[in-house]
Image 1 (cartoon, rainbow, N blue to C red):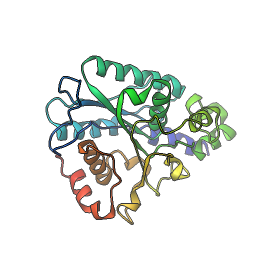
Image 2 (image 1 turned 120 degrees about the horizontal axis):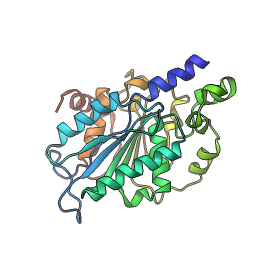
Image 3 (image 1 turned 135 degrees about the vertical axis):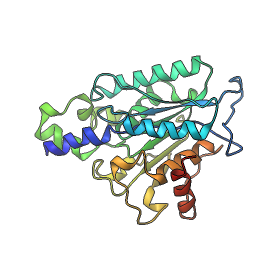
Length: 266
């Protein structure tokens, strides 16, 4: 069980969240009024453990696809990324405020794994609806993860603050789940039914969000938790979402085009 919890640290921290807001012409960055013509920055939030490697690759794809003026930044979490998620939300808020001070339009926040919980905390605690164009989460344990419960019960010394907060039914998650969706930014939650780290996988489902299990778009596709930030289908959905004025769920008819977009390198 302890090995499984350690795997949660290594895998879930590999990537974080993602994208830059694009609208109108799919090849041009969205320009929101009142922000000097600048598109909103994209801030990617790593998962448990804070590793930025996979998110760095996704940030590069977003920047390359977005063109001049597009800033995709991976958030560096406090400490080793396993501390209090509410502290990590304050770190994210610092990045958001810096982006807005530079003249960014409303940001897009992409949270990978536990980074999605950080994004949710930030939204609730720091008036995300006034600062974010949208939020995208990738395989995020928004209702907790069974591995965290195992760690807290069987190896409490190896279950730091973030692990305890990700136990299903924790006081922090209970508080978040008591918040309404009416004042939330538009939210896209993606997850894979093959997830062996976040169990159950549909812990990623958030009331009021556009909820998309990836297998509903490409039936039979095999995507593990650690592949979420770099898989062609996920990258394609993220890039298309950033280019879209309105948030809408991808359809099975979009499967091949989204995979092609995500693997094209453009």
